[in-house]
Structure formats: C-alpha cells, structure tokens
Length: 166
Length: 168
Image 1: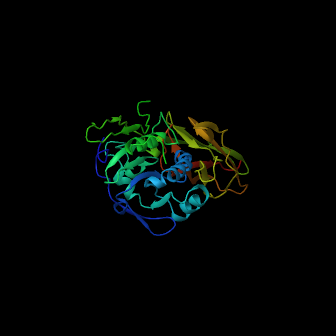
Image 2 (image 1 turned 135 degrees about the vertical axis):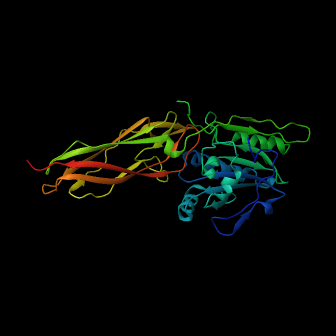
Image 3 (image 1 turned 90 degrees about the vertical axis):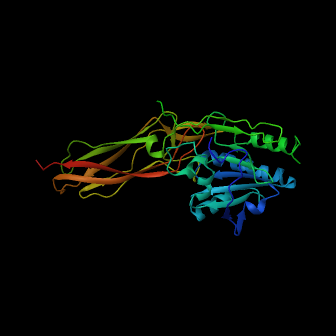
C-alpha cells in the first residue's frame, strides 16, 4: 500500500467548516483525530454518519475529535444534509470542495485507474494520533462493511489503553 | 468478470514501538464510473408521420455493482435518470424504468438496479413531421456502488437516431 499509510505522518490540511470557520489538522495536534471521507449521495457514508455522531459524543471527553470531510459537493447540498443528518454538534463537518485533501490521502496503489484520486477514499476512515501519525487506515471494505465503525472504536480503545469509552 | 472492482482494503496498524505494523491490504483493480456501466441505445427502424414507437436505453452493469433506482430510497441519493432533449417532429412520454432490486445495506435495504437496466421511452411522430433522420440527444445520470463502496455520480451523453419515413 502506497503512502499515506499507517506509520506515516498524516498530510496536513486546512478546510472550511460547514458552520463557518476552518479546521486545521495541524492545530489539532495533541488530540486524537478520526477523519472520515464522505458525501451526501453515498449510501455507505450515509449509513455511517449516525455512528460517527455517536463516536464524537462517546469520546469527546477523551480528547478525540471526529471530523467529516465532505468530498466534492456544493456547499448548499452538504449543508442541507448536515442540518438533517448530523446529530452531534461535536462532529466536525468540513468541506473539501475540490477534492484536493481527499486525493492527498488516497493510497497510491489503490484504484490506479482512477484519474480522480479523491474518489479512492470515499467512506474511508483514518485514525490519527496526537503526534499527527496515522495509526489506522480503513478503506471501505466490500466484505466487512460495518457502519458502526467497531474496528475504529476498538483500535481507539486499545491505543488509548482503555477498553471502554468514557 | 476479471475486473470486479471492489474497494477492498482493511489496513490495521499497531504502531507502538514494540509492535510491527501489520497490513492486510489487497489492492485490486477497479472500474471507473464510466466502466461500470455500458450504455446501449435502440430506436425503431422507421416510423411514419403520426406514428409512435419506443426508444430503448439500456444500462449494462458490471458484475458486483448496482446503481440507485429511478426513485432512490433517500432523497439525497442520486436517481438513475434518462433525459432526452426535444427533437423536431417528435414528442416523448415519461421513461419507463424496471422494477428496482433491493440491496441489503447493513440493517436496511435500498432500491437499486443491477445487471441490465432497460429504460423505455415512448415517442410520437407529429403528423406533419418532415421525413429523414432525426437526432435525439440526451443524458444518462447514475451513481454506482459496489458491495462496499461508491463511485462519484456521472452524467453521460447519449444519442439516438429515429428515421422518420415519408408519408405513404
């Protein structure tokens, strides 16, 4: 698997937040960050968003920030989706309108035929530790789709040295 | 088929200083949205003024993929839609789509199309239509997914030719 992958530094980025302002990965150093690449039209992403809201709530007091990265959608479309489907205010919503950040995170060897690399990471989840290192890179899995993201929770719990979220 | 493109990768890393990162990733080739669906168009050989017929736009999907139905399960999903522009001497009825196929998505199902998706569009030829070949331009919009991941929505151009025959 080409870069970026677990053990690599997470590519820094700054994106506009849906509700205003910006989110900077660099400024989130010191916190755990769960990045999730998404789009309103994507049924798999749609199935995951309520569980990401739960994750944002469940881990908030353990300094975990859960961040949605909406890929290549118009602001108005995504904003309307967030208003209806994002249940937690702790779930950070950002907009990668031109797909540049998503393309940066696309592992080089996956879907090499895709000229638009931003497509590769749709529904992918990336766990980044407080030092900014990727600890888990979970691409959408055709055989084990689990919108509850249990694998991410398990890795978070394991890495944070606690089996039960606070 | 040999290029059943599935995003298939589960990469777990134990990056602690005493553990070796473990990777269980199997990069697979995959299809682009355009490769997932081949589009066929069929028009009747010839229709006279005042006559009618049906156009066929058929989407042929690669194995292991589906597209959202024409009435998707959620309003924010992308409907499969065949749209035709107006053409001189012809009028079109509403497209007729097949019955959707349910696709299991965790604890729910969504309405999709799989395999072959024939879409029929009825048309009428005006009584005063001029004879000759009429070009009909249009688009097919769809959004495809495999069993575990989704591709960007696309809108692709189509063209059909209807031969309007001279009046007897």
